[in-house]
Length: 371
Image (cartoon, rainbow, N blue to C red; front, side, top):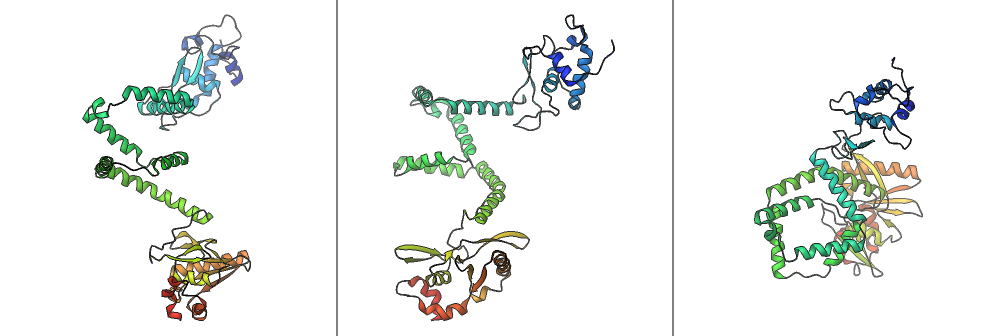
């Protein structure tokens, strides 16, 4: 009999019963070489040729089974499905009677164990609080008073503790878990024996060469990601760097009407004391310097008059980085209908005498030169 080319719909109709299951023995090669006594108009050889045509993308692999080709043909999938855990190997077919299915992972032990862990976590998450409580009580009764050393031996217990330390390294906690731990530890006092055990455990963990090596490698990997996140948060205004400058170690705090206000320098504090209607560090402007992009946080903003102020000593105005900031700020001000004003030593020489230094002695050190 001459093999006739079949459409995809004809192939699926020839393979499936009315209930949507595979016809008996359709997953074996013998079925395609036998004549269909009930449906004589169906050419099984043509069905096999059509299946091979529909799954031609699998020809690059050597270990493709017929059941796997049936799954791709019936579901009209035109590319191989890869294991979500390794992303390299194909999903393998499941041997279910009269059903063409693929497993959820490849058959490599590492991926299988990951799938088991996901299933266990899902089962525990979907478990009711009552059932979870009963299960925890049963485990507690079975293991009460039995330490790992007694249960597994000293050597095995040490290996398990070491594996747990490495597994927890860099592990992120949810906000609910962090809040729960904070509440449980608040006001809690450890006995001297417990503090000694905690100290010994921390020393052992941080002195472990493997722990240090893994910690260092993860820091190297995480550093660019952390930097990108911080820059994005600074840019959108959800994060402002610590008020203490790392290069000046300056931390100026002034109290007005019982409210404490922190500033990065005595110049900024003095300028705000004389202009208390200004908003502090509310404007973020991106600027390019030395081949990379940064965020410039302008010192003060007058929202009504639409003016942004930058407070800088005259000696720092010609620094290349500050020049790049000023250029970007001037451009931003022009595009947004603002004026950009630099407040330097000349302004303080004319206005520093207006501050009450008896109330705000913390700014006297920086302003003494103008008095």
